[in-house]
Length: 136
Length: 136
DNA sequence: GAGTATATTGAGAAAGATTCGCATTAGTAT
DNA sequence: ATACTAATGCGAATCTTTCTCAATATACTC
Image (cartoon, rainbow over all chains, first blue to last red):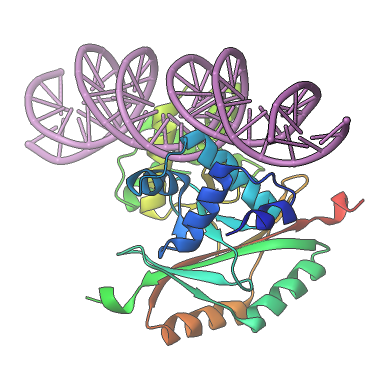
């Protein structure tokens, strides 16, 4: 939210980067595509270029400020890194995204990776289902 | 591998569909993009159109013959449904894809979905890491 | 606080992935 | 064999994302 946050992760504190970071913090929707961010910012009166949004989100990802997800859609969605790691459960009807964290699953993943000789670097778990509001 | 397989899932047994299904069965690589399938088939002397490959793979997915995955790449990869469900662990260096199945993780997922009031329909778990061959 | 070197921006072009439209061709049920 | 309908293949169109490059803004030095 302040330019020091950007400098702390090695990014120059430019106006577009500050605007985008602020926008992500202010947004009630936590998972957004680059296009979503771009359009919403224009609607809010913020003037940014689409290419810049893509670039900055990728930089934020490298810097660890956001996480990029590949849900079962044709595009990336980004999420601001606030607290700790979590996985996602999303509704196939309304598209709502909920979050969860399960230490048992986390541990098993490490065990499985180790057993197969892998050094784990990351993982993505998405559960698809019908949310309470969309049942029948 | 035979035209009855296609009819069984409600698809007309056309030559392109048979060729693609045969190709998938014969391929040593189990995870391929539409482009991969298209190019490999051309190299093998099979004559198909790219649009047809996309269409047929999508139909195969609907019919349950293949599964579509969204790994951390910009495109879909398809996998022939042979045996039972499994998850994936893939090497971030060489791109190799291994498979695993863990009943504990499966069960936990169902519990979590239920606890949040979701009716689970599917899930995707991908573990990323460095495979044994790519360790330093 | 101005001057300068350099990184960043924005607009449009370009690339990559996927789908669409439509005339031609091929399955399938008579 | 015939005719009806669905499927193919090509290129055009669409969508997402990246690239190019001239104009501009940031940060560093004095």
